[in-house]
Image (cartoon, rainbow, N blue to C red; front, side, top):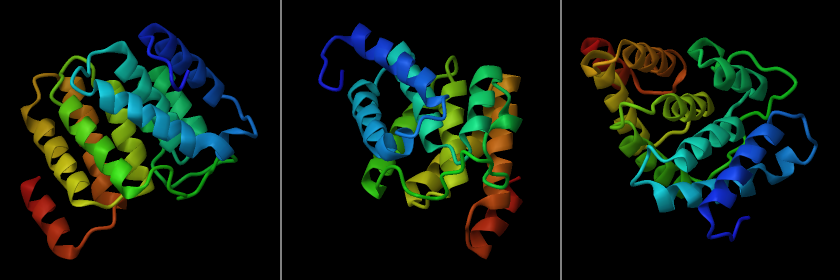
Length: 192
């Protein structure tokens, strides 16, 4: 399906992959990087339409691939409860550590896709899931800092209370766990 041009076949395969990633299969760690690259390629080809079901399914699957603790990511995706998404502190038997799944260039592409997806007020749960998974991996780049600035603005400016809450939780995780300089931390605290 990696080379398929049929969108319905790709969507179905993403949904199947989403189910398979919930299982503790021994092949998942081996192919995690390749799967993430393929999903990123799909997302980058469809990034202009974040309401597309394939993009949302890709975000959900990437959440499972990037999550530090898959079992908590699964709970989040099933319940849409931001408290259950991996925060990098508690790790269970599904711990994959901080091994990079995507390289820096690929992560920059993903961050730019997420930045454009944040403008969509209708479909934000899957987007926030990927952002929280990236935050738990502590990916460092100027683009990611810009993305978190957008998240901070959403905590105040969003029209939806649930969106404001989720953005606030992600930003608080970022402040508490993310490696940043003293000046950046002080600037964020002044903004709050």
